Image (cartoon, rainbow, N blue to C red):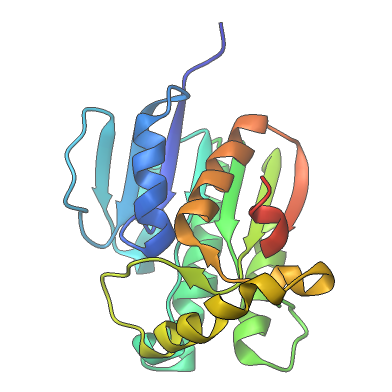
Length: 219
């Protein structure tokens, strides 16, 4: 009989995280799901343990962050964050510290949403931050690190992101034309990303694995 595990999710109030939280709660793989965030999500479930934290002092909550599989859906935009410095804090510092704390608490897998084009040496700030995050997460002693690089995410957001909504309207009609090397640029449903993260965790593959958007859609 396989071990029933504990999942930890950060960013459950987001587009992918909202779908993923429900999938985790409905999965027989997990007997407990710890949701870590600045606020509670409006959901009650017998398996759900909500931990409200100050991400600037995440290590203070380490005793409550023990899990087997960690799913990180943290992310913002420079516009929403208000500055490049604040964006870096959310998309790099908070993610890496979550990896450090949960690795120290014995987590075996870390699954994180990055972005298409992530590259630590990129000349583009957004891609550079995402690449540096990927690099630093991989330094932690997990049995497995799974990095998901979706393209434009589709789905209903609680917050309005005008630029992404406009891009979605433009890109969706072009999706059928994106074949071969262009396939990774197709917009992808947030729910598809969430499903692929859960499926990947269930495979328990050791090592570091990076999934471009077209591969995420096939998982």
